[in-house]
Image (cartoon, rainbow over all chains, first blue to last red; front, side, top):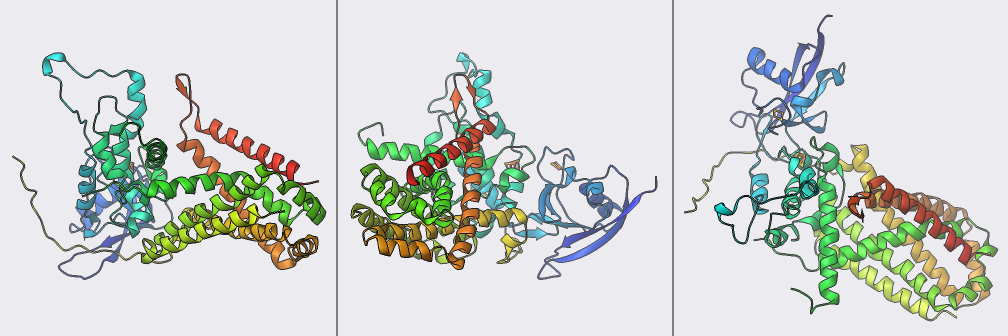
Length: 248
Length: 113
Length: 135
Ligand code: SF4
Ligand code: FES
């Protein structure tokens, strides 16, 4: 079988030589099992060593190879060229994030938001080591497991027009992770997290476009996490209004 | 740095109640008003119905809650379309409209024969 | 001790978002239509409310308004509003399956079942309203 030829149009941005991003076309032959990331690596190794992009694991786990492929946020290590052939492929940096160089985006904003929701198990008081580990039943694990699969690839942010228009929005992955820890039977950090996700920049900004869930490579379903948090927060609020003498 | 927003649950609560009411009852009312024969929902029939306080309550809810639903959705849709006044002025205008509509609805329904 | 985080400065490029973002992709377009449905529903309800107010004005006024509503323009509006309203209902029940966690004993009721029950409830509610309001 002869190799097929495909054209890739790749965003280039070299701040030291241009004010705005441009596009560069590369034509290449590819074997059937190549993904977009393979093609980018081929370009970098054999055609144009200046092309810059992030990647690491090549197996959908590290979450660093996310890019827009024909306008859709994708892990490029899981996007097969054969699925796009014979059409051209447009590869751009993740939407809504600032570009640092070529296909590399600035993720500082996301990292701050991630940290803000304390994505680790919080205890009021740690029990002494000698008492052993915190036990959890399989059912308790099942409660949050889905939301713990996130690989921080940020595809969901690139699918979220709300994040695009309001960069303050804490966003899908961070809220889904807050939900994950809130649902964890070992965790006691709900109150501090609620401060963040029930703020104006948190769940209330979400209009349930729902695309975050569609593009997530790990089926985390951030849209569902956000909606459930809205329902729970509103119910709590209504209770506190109707029964102000109840628990604080 | 982040602060719990104490008013959004109120608007969101009305939004979702309105969404339920609209989803359950509005399509059938559009059919009745728009497509059925005029006699099917004729004057005497309606007057006999609205004498019932439960029907009055139903009609009030049917009109009022979806107004809040619409105000909330439009507020955020316009925001997503890039309208920046959305946060302040537009919210006042839209929710204000829903409150006004609710008061008018209360008056009309309460004074029905 | 907490280390202060280092600050790096580097130039970045912020891409502008075109005002037509929601027209470029079917999914985002459908989202906007879902939001817009609320507008048509509200307009319909205001027309309905006006009709109710005419009940206080007597049979002639009410009957005349009913006739006005049969004009071509209004019929077109009702057709459009009906499509939007049904789309709202459909999306609302689909989302409800995802959002509402219903537990029966130890296990969760699947999404599809919740949506199916809601759809059935919708049909029943519509039938009841039709039965109560029409002769
Ligand atoms: S929620 Fe999904 S799409 Fe978003 S960062 Fe996590 S893995 Fe990626
Ligand atoms: S390279 Fe690690 S997820 Fe694609």
